[in-house]
Amino acid sequence: MNRTELLKEKHAGILLPLFSMRSQKDWGIGDISSFGDYIEFFFRHNFDIVEILPINDLAPGINCPYTALSGFAIDPVYISVEDLDDLNENKNLKKSLLEENRAALNKIKKSRYILYDDIRKIKYSFLWNAYQSFIDNHLKATSERANQFSTFLRQNDYWLNDYALFRTIKDKLGWISWTNWPVELKNKGREAIERFSAENKKQIDFFKYVQWQISSQWERLKKKAEKLNVKIYGDLPFMVNQESADVWSRQSEFIIDVSIGAPPDAFSKNGQDWGLPACNWWEVEKKNFEWWRQKVKRAQDLYHIYRLDHMVGFFRTWIVPHNKNEEPHFDLKDENEQIARGKRFLKAMLSASWLLPIAEDLGLIPPYVGETLKEMNVPGYKVMRWEKRNGKYVSPEDYYPVSCATTSTHDTTTLKEWWLSLKKKEKKLFWKMVDSKNRCPSSCAKTLENIVEKLFSTSSLFIILPLVDALGLEARINTPNTTGTHNWSWRPNFTIEEINSFSPVMNRMEKLKKIIEKTRKK
Image 1 (tube, rainbow, N blue to C red):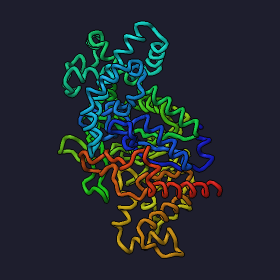
Image 2: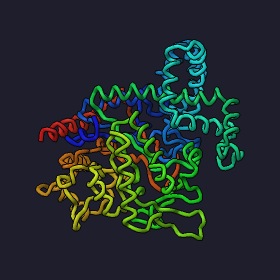
Image 3: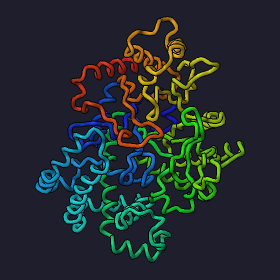
Image 4: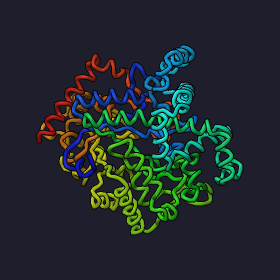
């Protein structure tokens, strides 16, 4: 279903990070197999979109999915080891590996937080053995699977070669910054790269094999979703980590002596410094947004809809100089220049793929961003608690149709937290928008149910409901301006296999199923 068709009807979606998709068979984090089970569950309750957060490969010690090693590679933590063909061909090897790692696996699965590094390490050990089996049983024999691997390499050479090379050099040099690599490797000198590639071919090919295996599992997942007419809604972060294959391989397109962030606002009086490099827009535009076009090309293999993170940053980017004598500032000062760049970017994205982008246009957003999105028929966001006009909350029925309505985001308090923290006067004002004819229920759970039902009355073509809000939970996905294991670690206290026996969960989901049925009949 292309973007034109998606804009012809209403859609109901659930936001649930892949890492949160708990199952009995997972290894301490949601995986591709778990995702398939959740898609089936949401489909049975009339949801036709499942939104996830970024799934890009992360460096050791990092759990934030918005600062990745690559804008293209998928993190191996998400692979389903149980579904690795090259291990399943050798049952004795698989059984032996499971016995050797049983204690480590038990520790990982019992942890309160997601142990990203531990999971990645143990999955890499299984993947290395699977890779060795693939070499012995398929590559040497030039089997059909070997041919499939070759096809994947050809189709993905626009990102895979640089990623696998970068990832191997990082391992070999002890994860020091690429800015401190030997100058020939740092600057991608031809002879040095050819020599290193020849000396480390097996390991470089291993990282390619890992991405092939993940992509193969994802391809089966996507086909399953399409069979059920469920759309996978992915997330394309605005930027990658400075220590990424992208920045190293495209050094002229990034500025690494400054950071990007957000200007001061009600949530951060000093503004935010995200510690990520800035885009060299002059160089990027000279190449007609090639890096972003390629990211969308990759997204087309994985998703049906993609989220454009930090939409305002494409119009104007908040720059935080590393030199403390310089003041933070926007990279473009003139509003007309800002509008022109944003339009050029969106035109490039729309021409790069048939996928539908949804723009994350939240925060301090100049009016021209929304106007541009309307002009180009790209949905923006409508978060109920932030939609106000003339001191009153705007009813979802009055939202602009080409938009995405929601109760909260992964960066905000949940609907329940927000409601409980709201002052009495503000609660009355908000409830007046929800139901002007009846008093607010004394039960918090009932109030939240009514708010969610009100959301589904929206004119917006897209409704995305975070699972935590669907279930009336307080669990946070991320708390901005904080770091630690508490972020990007939330998992429900039930597995997908147990969900049918959790009556509070099933009661809420059955109610939502009926609400969606009623909404679609209008």
